[in-house]
Length: 247
Image (cartoon, rainbow, N blue to C red; front, side):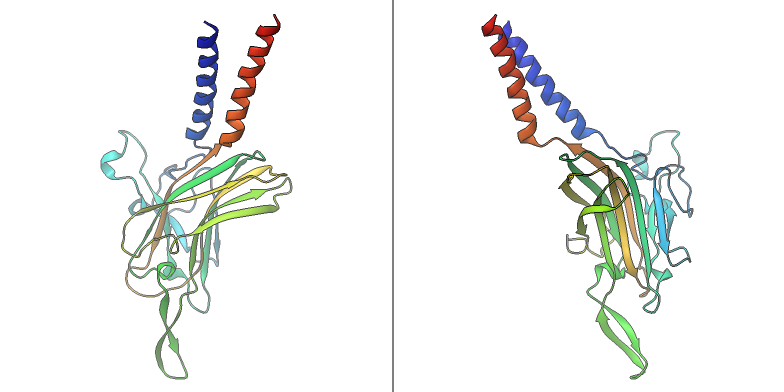
């Protein structure tokens, strides 16, 4: 009977840890609320664009979830449309989409999100054509555009303690019009008060043709370190065993 009780306690602790790992800490991670096409912003998220000129907006055709999987009676499903054509080599455009949640030092955080690049999105190209006025023609130059998913760990004053990120092109995102999932993970450092889940496009420039990119379906989870969880379970079981032997 005692062994069964101890076994049940360990299973309960494991289930508790698994429950934490499954819980998405983000509000509206799918970006589908309020579900309006060509409107800035999604409930729970902050959207920052530079310069003005609408370099990003929500769009129904930027949604990652297939239409057939849309729940009955749900709002329109959307994703973030990165409108790189709003920028130029002289005045590139940048976008940050982020959400802050309470953080716990020592907890491992895992961010997953999906992205799609069209054929001529500069963030997926090594080089782009740039007009050279001295030559009177276009020549190839390195693309200035970088696209990231990131986790920022913030202190009580919203200062950034550390950042973990993945650059999407370097992580295998291709300009093939296909959705790809990316992952970022890191342990919150001492002093962490909040955790920021972020998608960013930096220095977007106009190229030609189909040149947009899209973000959708963000999830942020907090996972107790395996060693800590195991030690905690063993310590609890050990304490119960010692108390019973003393009795």
